[in-house]
Length: 306
Image (cartoon, rainbow, N blue to C red):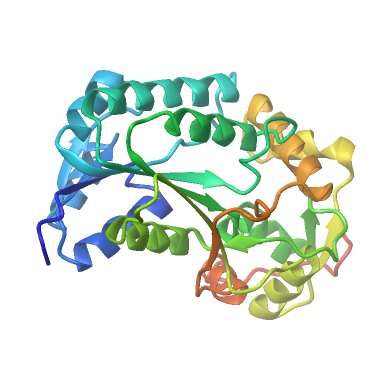
């Protein structure tokens, strides 16, 4: 393999980042991981990576971490518990842009979101629209990898669904299929794209799983895995934000998530028509959910008794 230069992965400790790093190392290319936690840095050094400790909102530290990079994988973590989730994410984007403006890598791969082509009314997804817009102004070959909803997002509901036999859903109606993908598959796609840069200035790739599923499919599959019946139930719109906050996220982020699901249920969050390509991960819903089910089964009530 010819000298490929240094690949830098921001947010390498996340599910997507870890999958990208692992795939790149299996191909024997040099990788520098950027993480906040020193223990994660030590872990990646054990894999043969360079590792830098930097907060994604610290532009000078990011500039040092990305210096000399041929390619940089960019991700903007969501401000789950921030007082203002949108403001925190916009601050992260500014920091990343300031750093990349100094280091000028040849290519950038941005982890984005289905629906990021829309300029309004998409809640949390709107932040990824802003990220893409800023990156398009950079003098670098840009790959935008738009990810469908992660299958792993159901994890916070798995235990409760097994206990009660009811899976509450913000996807309405329950029978409507939607795009979804395993986070690890997104990381594998990212690595493949980094290793095979296109000749075009802008490349848009949509990442989803082998099939589309409905909330009812999720409930049925989860029940089959857990060994009992589980039914999906629409969570009323007025209960969304209290339920999300009760699940441990901040009010600001909950409001953005609710707005995103409003757009989802209106059919606005999907592949951008006529733009780019669709790549499909190999992980199906059953495989992803199986990894989320507790190893110790718990007794539960009959479906509908919550």
